[in-house]
Image (cartoon, rainbow, N blue to C red; front, side, top):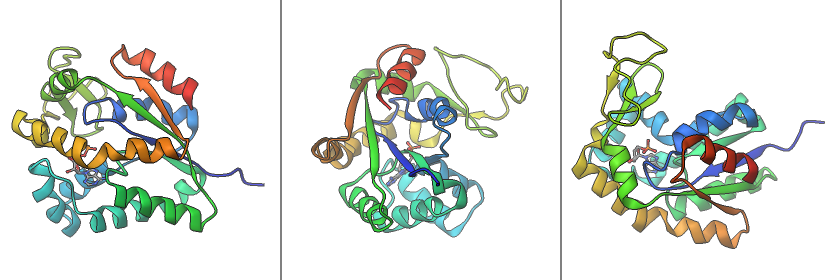
Length: 217
Ligand code: AMP
């Protein structure tokens, strides 16, 4: 008998470490890491129609409209490797997205198992995002001060692949945080009422956050 698929959603403000933690947890959980931000960036890099449309919103720190986002993520979740579930990062970000996901899962007799909320104070998030560097090849993240690789160790690229995301510039970081509080934070209560929310202190060393997440999941 195939085991029930497992759906876990990592919730938290931009810069709370969702992507980093997902990369750590996906092996333990044996689940694909589905990051809506990575899916958009992949489309942008490949200059697809979806990518071109999404880029105008992303560069402003705004959310991409629900219809586009929901269709993109649902398409990803319908792929064979997601038959066992998914570790979702960055989706859902609005109530409409959360409801669409619940509906799609319940139509297949599935449900969300856990929603860890990674709590990090606002000033820490701003500091993390504004120093963040990403490897264009493998999406690994570094920090100008806290994790200052000059080159991605996996690629020995002498730094040529490391870049600062356009939306990690200070003005855009501010609007992304406003968007989080206005549009995404209502999901905290939404999942609390469903009894699946678990709160995690994200303002600790990375390994401790991972350990708390493992224990919670
Ligand atoms: P992230 O890498 O998760 O920080 O996402 C980067 C950007 O992609 C966000 O600031 C949004 O512009 C867009 N994005 C990612 N996920 C979503 C989503 N679920 N709904 C709408 N826009 C999204």
